[in-house]
Image 1 (cartoon, helix red, strand yellow):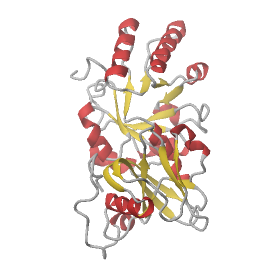
Image 2 (spheres, rainbow, N blue to C red):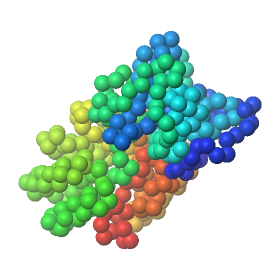
Image 3 (cartoon, helix red, strand yellow):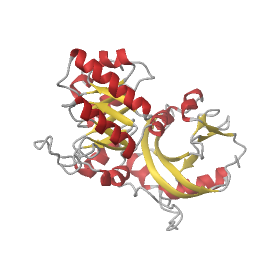
Image 4 (cartoon, rainbow, N blue to C red):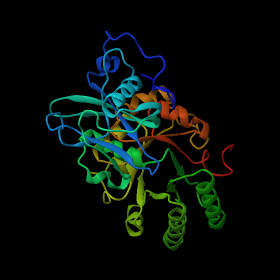
Length: 343
């Protein structure tokens, strides 16, 4: 099922066919549940606590509820937010979908960001509600299905992968330009031709640049380097296939490059923070690789239980299409690095 576009009012065009079953539940055999990530002007996220007698009772959750027969997901979420919180959602965009199996039920958690709403959220059904800083979400007991949503909340929509740093000074200038002009907040340093002292020195300077602009840095492949410098790591698929447990601490981002359903399942099973799935479109760097296309990309992401970036032949203008097909956002070298967009 193709995801709606990046923005949706959620109010116009409501279905009157209430007798029809939820198509997603029929198709997947999972209870279709919608949830909302709502941020206030301070960037805090709204949580609600489930009543003790409910499934997963007593835990905090992103507000939402079940999709009723005849409803589209965004229509269901608009209704749930009105009933539960007394607000009118005016602008939504898809964030992530998580299939999850509890001992007593199988669900599809369909999560949307609420970009604009009217009203003041209150617990209209007697449930406590609370605005929580993203950094404090880990201290609130959430249903297991909600854990990848926390990661998706914290990850930006654009993941910059650097080209090889042929000339370090120019490389650092262009990196800073990307961080400033494109609002990049997640960077993977690829420096396969450097080693030893030269690589160590570059990592320190790139880390300082990223820190100064509030961006998180991952290094490509080098686990020991990541450990020494307190960074995240981006694993290649061949590394992923030999791991038996997640590397690094839970405070460090661990990501992986994936190209098929098997590698996505491995990344999910190891509890990695996110994956990159490629190639979506034809790419100049790997012209021999057969592109997935958006439909196959969406089908693979639909089975994943972690955020997934789309990679391969993507430019900034592909961002809405990527989100509409279930991606966390886009990952790119040429599409996000200054001066390479048209190359």
